Image (cartoon, rainbow, N blue to C red; front, side, top):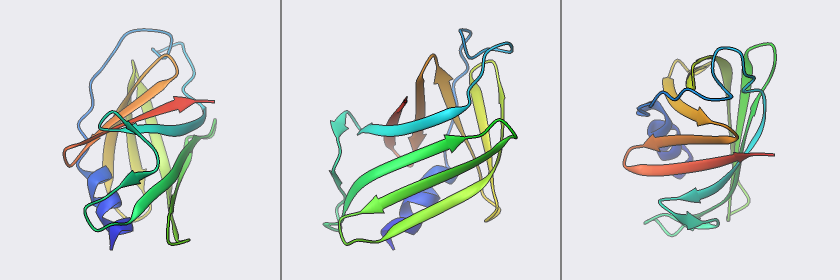
Length: 123
């Protein structure tokens, strides 16, 4: 249930554009690791009591992505699909049919999802 909540949250993302090294001539590819949710470091406890212990998004050069979330109960959730990026805005097209957005500034991917601000750092 919490995995679905996180995916629904991803579907509601609003993006902000930025002009910097990830602009039209910069690369957004790489592995991004979730660092904070609402300014708090992981593990992040949801109201259900379940903890999100890690989350990584891999943006590949072929335009595909994979997002792996791991939880304190040993479960994990994988979302995958394709993405496009332009001038700091990233749009994700999940194979589940969901579309969501984020923004990248330098090595930081930010997503605001159902009221949660998630900040990822590129490794």
